[in-house]
Length: 627
Image (cartoon, rainbow, N blue to C red; front, side):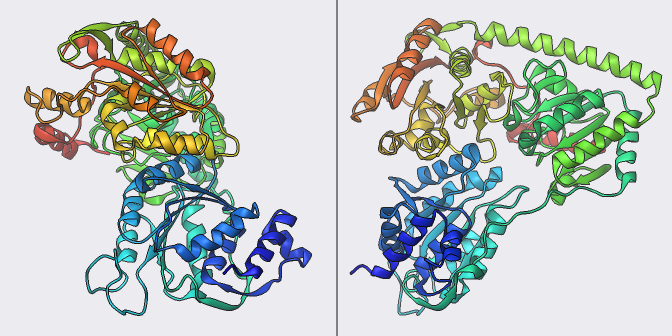
């Protein structure tokens, strides 16, 4: 039977528009007797969290009942999903692309394990989300169905604390501490993380007596910080003036600081090298933008990495593919690293660490560089460096054009000529840019071609989940378009294998009224791994099959989804894109693409990677690098 006090509290909050205003007005008592479930929901409201993506089960029925009442009164919103991995990805996209912090809600056991697996994408990319998992009871009356079947205490808590901050609400009255730790993780300004709240089944309905609502912590607000000593900036500026060949590696952390980065780039007379997640921080056509660099990389980006004397790192974790497994800067003699996280800022040897808010640090560093004395000889050499890099950028642009201008090749699987993947991906990227759509890339070959090809001018025109490279992320992210308050049209770039990881998105996105498009680039294989096998050993193995799937028909079987065939040329694909975009809802376009060893079929790789038979050479180079 519904507790009428629960609904009364929800109505009071709805009438005032915010929990704190309801308390201040006296319509919501500051001290209440409340279940742990309702206390958690009220505490999350104080942190501005109103949206729950969830799958309800026996492990969260009590919290689900509280959520029902608050949703009916318009205080919270619940978005039911069909798969916990996909749900975790959609929540990640909501926080990442739309800056809304949601909560993921699952039952005990397999559901929690799947959501936890999906949270790797958020953990790897520094995205803050609450994960609330039903958990085994605290009384030890025997195994709970679907708990981890071992006679050890707090097993989900042990598991979840590996990926991020975790708390088991063993005692209802510990809610305040749980929420304090939660906001510190989820709303941390530098590389936030998921927060895993393990919520035992029997604790959820427990009554917290005389809970003071204002004692529940609100959202953490961390002031901008930067080194205060002037000598720090003067020393860094002197280092910058000392070197002529400067490369500035931009990581995902630089996306929120594009203005400061662009001002600093001009003052530094260096060149920018992008990570897959930082496209748009510097405009595509900016002459100092050398595009992406790393294990896959580009002609121009990797040239700058290989030949720079000074490396300036901004907001990057220096992931293996971003810095060629530690071998990307063989000629670098010194490093300046700007990052809010000390561990990441100190990643390289011979580093001057400038830890703090990127914009705050760069504004002072840019001023220090402008005020410092330039050596004419070094400045002349810097001019030569910029000219050499510009020539490499022109070479890269010509190379890309030759592989994306309606290139078709005869494919032995399709038994006819089809578009190459770079040509098809570029077509869809051009269309997305024209309509102002948010591009989201899945793992694998599609992702690699994407970050080599996109021509972004501002951050967050593209999201590419390279932190975990989680197959199925892009398609799952489409749901966020229907959940966000300030939504935008989304296009998911996915391979045939990645799409089949989470095909239920066709239903979830429809339920949540998402407007967007899934483009399936079908080469009938795991193209990235097939290509890696071919380049390392010659033959590919175990990464393809002979099962053909008509993805357009599959999509059309869901009432309301428009399934289209993308054709065999840029013109046919463009026509399909226009039809898909005109559809009021979700559309899917199936595009056959070529796979093979023809040089026109791909964009190449320009760096090193510590995998397979390359290990010996890469590790030898790494041991010889000075930074």
